[in-house]
Image (cartoon, rainbow, N blue to C red; front, side):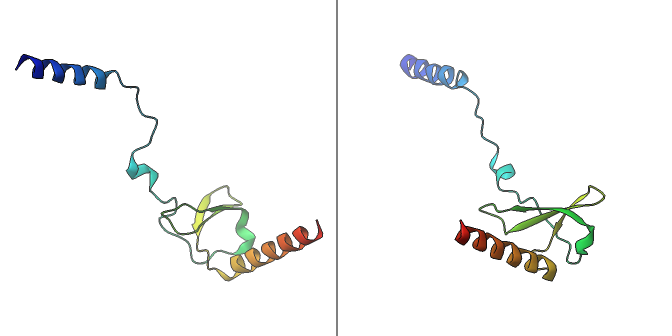
Length: 98
């Protein structure tokens, strides 16, 4: 009985001296940045685009507006699809010429 009690105290002592973990709780790691998206936004209101791709979330597009507000927008908006096509076309063209 005394050996079991001593073993339990030893395990508790080792566990209490373990360094703290740097990992975030799983609930924070797996959250998507965009929970809702705008389906219509004029291109002229957008100052900057940012794209986020995380393993557990769909493709996310964050637009910084001229008012410095950030909103999530639908990646399937026609002007955004055209913007992405043009960007990929330019990248391919630059890659071929390099």
